[in-house]
Image 1 (spheres, rainbow, N blue to C red):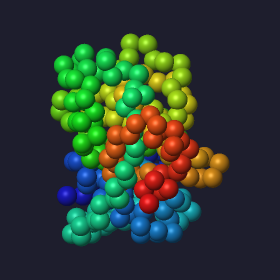
Image 2: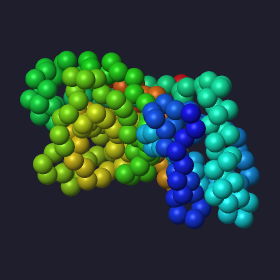
Image 3: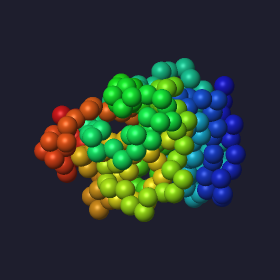
Image 4: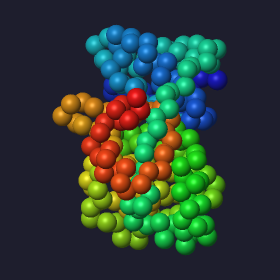
Length: 225
């Protein structure tokens, strides 16, 4: 089934899919095609924004090409994104007691569930490289945001709310429930370092606070390797 297409301004197309997996597969296939009219591909959950060079193609031409890519993609299975193992020190969580109160689970069970799931990067945003990871195990779903967001969360803070978990890649204000912190550097804007991509997969590995201090500042590929 082709995606539903709509203009996005005068130089982009929004493509809507029935499910997240279809959108991510389409985005990976389109980005890999490296067509000369293609400027940027931005997936987010079940939609993909496609930006094109107006000097090379118009909306009608882009729409035709996107439908062709969608049909081709449906006939060929796209390789899944890589799995990244990200260490997380749950001892540094700020809201573990709050999550336990809302879920009725013990802190140990919360860690077991959170670290036992494999998440998909469905979108990047909010702050540079912030990965929106879905979806949480059912037992952890629907914990609300904080009533009053914190004015500062440290880089690497791992939070959850609703159906999602995510990682604050920079020190920022934030209202998610913080259940741990990763020591890894996941973004360096000056270097153009953004190792996580939409469609990648993430699994958290529990570590001690001692291990956190030993790993602090390392980049993701240093730990992955």
